[in-house]
Length: 102
Image 1 (tube, helix red, strand yellow):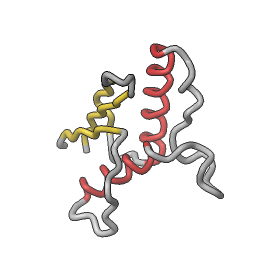
Image 2 (cartoon, rainbow, N blue to C red):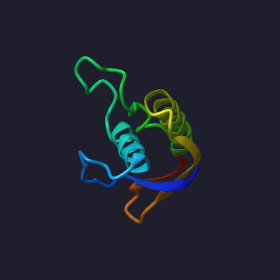
Image 3 (spheres, rainbow, N blue to C red):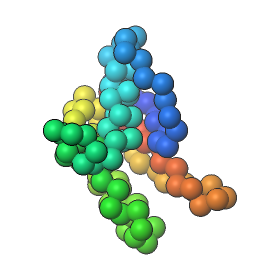
């Protein structure tokens, strides 16, 4: 098993021909995390809920972490989340750094 890090929030170009299984899993995790729940027709439960966005930061972080863990466990079981870190920039934009093992 190898550990990888995903910086959530940036857009990544999708490769329809991933070079290996690890790249495919990482791409799938990014897709899961960047898809708002209820936005995919006929697959409404796919993705991450964003209902916690207007809540206090500590509550929002806890709920967002739970959403990430549940969604990745359900839709990409080959990835195991080992760590989730939250940081914010000077403008208050929240950045999420996720470490996963494949």
